Image 1: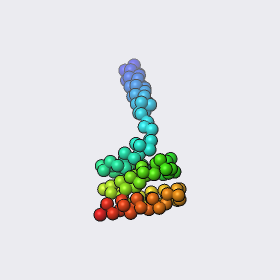
Image 2 (image 1 turned 30 degrees about the vertical axis):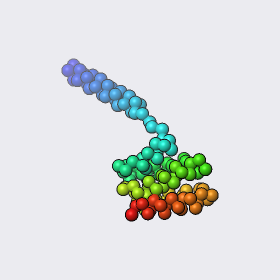
Image 3 (image 1 turned 60 degrees about the horizontal axis):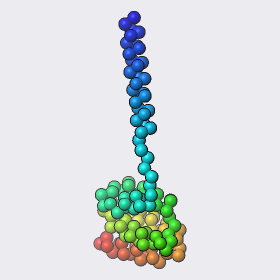
Image 4 (image 1 turned 90 degrees about the vertical axis):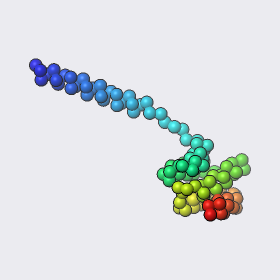
Length: 122
């Protein structure tokens, strides 16, 4: 009889524990990544290398096309990426090369922004 009581208490505790873990997983919010939020990651000098790679990947994947209204934002972003303390040359070159490939009309402007950013890097 006592064994059944302990078994019942154990099953109730297991049921409550499983129920709490499922509701916790449902309550975690998902963030929507916009161009502005991804740009802020690159502009934030305390962002890690992993965060930079993620931001660059998402910008190239979702927002890779440049137009006359957004060219200044991409110029500033490329320069900010060049001077970021946690960036590396492969990331900078991949960002620049993919932008130039996807936007051949702005190739000259992108190249000037890269040169400017690398000059600021010192």
